[in-house]
Length: 346
Ligand code: NAP
Image (cartoon, rainbow, N blue to C red; front, side, top):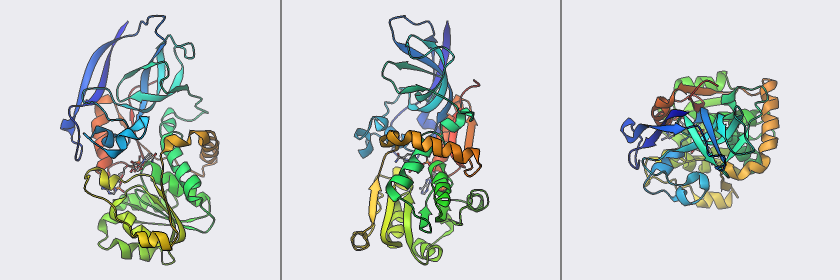
């Protein structure tokens, strides 16, 4: 049997802010009958992840592109891989059967053909919705957990600052930090987001960075006794002023620098004298390097979800056609929590 596989690709390298015109929906017939010797799995994609880092892959050049298998450049016209959940519709790989629910590297499309060695695992949903396994129980959750606990090592009473705090990673960092007994302040780009941080997610305080004219004074007012941990999702000026407000022996997890992704000339220039004399640890990291703690992360987060100590925050669009606008929305601050596209019903 043949199906039509529709998928999203880029028309050209994307070196500035992504626009609708950078993307194209392609459609090709896909045969579901497989050669028995092929060792291939065909997955019907159900939920796919939408993440800011894809922009660095779309550029004609980014320093990120040669650093990890997940970061390789996207070739215009080709399918774009991403983390996602799907259902096996055909398989000649002995490890997978038709009907299996799987999680792994799928693509921004309706079907994914995965050869032997591709990143794919059977999914035990543990009773949670499939979408959770793309976000809170997937790489976004692992990113928050690894960056906060492995790099920042929060202690009760410490003061934690999180940027892009209502995003996929940031909201979980704040929630995990609250559960560790920390005082947590987040920043985000709208009044609505600030209200959600305080009222729904239990942040101690939050502010709209777009309304502030002097970010250094703003941080001083929210942290009169200094910051112990900064979870950096944005880079740029916020990173500079966070360093200036860090306490001695502070820790900064540099998770992402989204404010620098649109402009390769823009760079944070934090005061290195402060880094040295305050003995601040600044560490970049990639979630993909933390698969060894995935089991710990999953059991802890599932427990918190079951007891209601952590709130999932998802922003789900429908249909493969909505992938470009879902992706663009990240760069306009329009997402509330984890951005996911639902491609199909199970
Ligand atoms: P997200 O926060 O859900 O979405 C992106 C958010 O970034 C937007 O909603 C927007 O929120 C904010 N933003 C957009 N442009 C901005 C700008 N110019 N200045 C300041 N904020 C801006 O995305 P996410 O998936 O959680 O990712 C957050 C960061 O972590 C990104 O930098 C991403 O690349 C990084 N990341 C790293 C890893 C890793 O392994 N190291 C893994 C996942 C994500 P506002 O309304 O607050 O502006």
